[in-house]
Image (cartoon, rainbow, N blue to C red; front, side, top):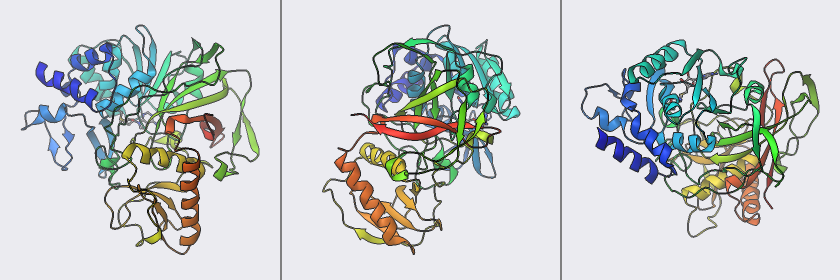
Length: 454
Ligand SMILES: C[S@@+](CC[C@H](N)C(=O)[O-])C[C@H]1O[C@@H](n2cnc3c(N)ncnc32)[C@H](O)[C@@H]1O
């Protein structure tokens, strides 16, 4: 067992997560198998149970373990460990910190946080999942975690936290998290922009085309690289609400963002219309004031690409900047060549994701799909019928399909030109500003404008 966990830690590190000694020790200390005693779905679709052949080897792969399905769709899991490590590092947990987790799942991440010294409150929308996590924590003797059943949109009313970590894919940041994230940490606005490494949650299991870790250009990401970039624009110390580490929908995936709110007395205004998508900016009239928002300005940086299962409830509200949902296999009409390859050497998976991110900034139609005749998932600008549009391949060629093929092919070419003339910006180079949007009764802060570092 000790050996298994030692190899597990090495594997997580090799797969791109920069493990601090504290994080290594946490992964080595917490028995992951104790959090999946009812088993999990293997990649081949079979159910692994304690005692079955290879169970512990499967538990200690650097892989997502899907622990609950509804109608064949994963609704709870233990996330990919290297992704958890990257997110925990971005949260920068210090002993004694109060941490709010949204998406308790198996309780494994809460256990790691506790071993890191955090005082954890974790929320899950599924009451049975909460009870299983409670039993798992008790089984391992990890005490002190507060488990709440309910919609994570509300956070943990009445509590204050030094950081918030969201382990389910959302459309944006709940105002409750910003209110509950203690505006206390003094920062000179330099923080993690994240390792250039990728984790992927469970889209592979949701029937989506090749989006799972190790398989597709969005999902794979096994390259490692160090921490990079700076989060803030200025050098002046500012007091900001503690970091919120959260996977936010973008072009059919969920890049993990490190979000900060600058506190202020201003109330937010709900934006509901989009203008200038090609400029990567949201315009339009502000409609309806939302009382009680503690944040005056909310900004973010990308930590790493990822793909998570999608949250229930208002956290996944559609809004003016929402991209289309990923397109399942067999939904698209055949594609034909529209523009030839432009690079002798196709983009590696990392650079392709950078292009993907930029495409999501410049087009609200960017998402991913299984393009007929191609393996894995592909960046596509989906037309309004949902069956055609233009696909951008890693070699820079463009395929198109449907009645609007020429229009979408031209837009794809424009995105490629623009990305090249901007010197192929990496995803962490975008400075993101969020705006309050969605249902005025349950608004969320969603990415609204993007600017590239100079
Ligand atoms: C990927 S799992 C979380 C993994 C977990 N942190 C772990 O360590 O096992 C996502 C969880 O988010 C929960 N969830 C989905 N929508 C939610 C919501 N609106 N509020 C709170 N939890 C939600 C699901 O029930 C699921 O258990």
